[in-house]
Image 1 (cartoon, rainbow, N blue to C red):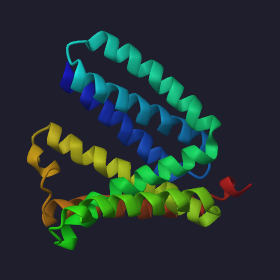
Image 2 (image 1 turned 45 degrees about the vertical axis):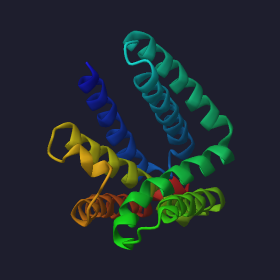
Image 3 (image 1 turned 45 degrees about the horizontal axis):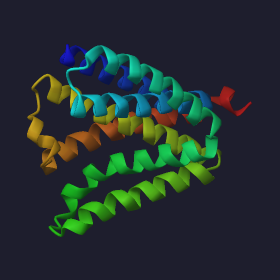
Image 4 (image 1 turned 60 degrees about the vertical axis):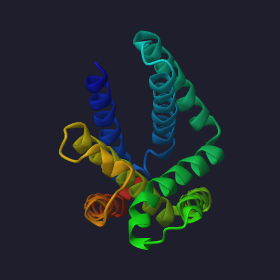
Length: 197
């Protein structure tokens, strides 16, 4: 049951991320609401799995309710939601950066995600048309790549320990999938003249 729900959730995240990556500028507010649903719903589900894994039905119902609330909040509090979503994208990028730094100090592993989060949040908050297209393409590509990576772990293609100790090969695979998705999405959004009208 858990594997089915997890796989379904990852599939939804991948599809949503691709839509955001390729059409994020055109449907930014709508997709920001969808992002709120995914983020809040996922956090609620993760909380249930950690603290009360036996409550499957209440977990599903509560997660769906919280997802609806998250969608509403992200749609209404647009600037705050844009900052949070940009920050989440920045933090999601940090695991791909850390393996290349080769720095053992513990505080660096906290500082890099914080800096990435602040940069991502501020860029999405103050962005103009081109930067918004870049950020939506990058955000969609980040979440698609992460969901794809987790799916590979789910199907035992990658070991679960990769999440704790990613090596340069896994980071390179993640960056390759991210880059392909990002540049294709950005090209599509730049070519989308209808979004400009």
